[in-house]
Image (cartoon, rainbow, N blue to C red; front, side):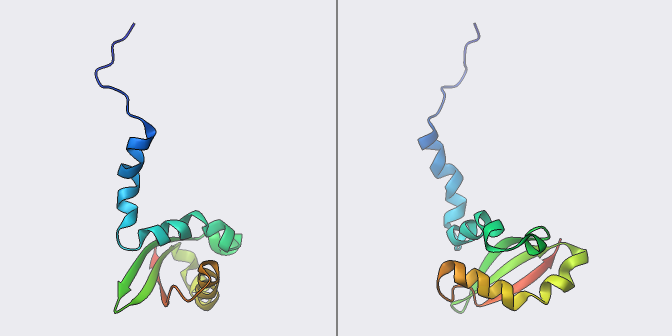
Length: 103
């Protein structure tokens, strides 16, 4: 029989450690977007993009979306559609603008 060096931790004690980084800088909303990204968009957008960060500047939220380099121009043409779908997901005008980042 092997002796354990450390006591096991309960899951409830680990959850705050995992979620702590998600609470700062609107990360709860970003996490909601990331978890529902496939539900919000079709495969054409979902397969080549991923939301990375929400930046708040002068009370305006900007979503940074990482895009595959070969699809960045095509996806950028759909920026108004992406913006409207994200805001429809939240039920109001939550995101003001979008910035695309090359992968």
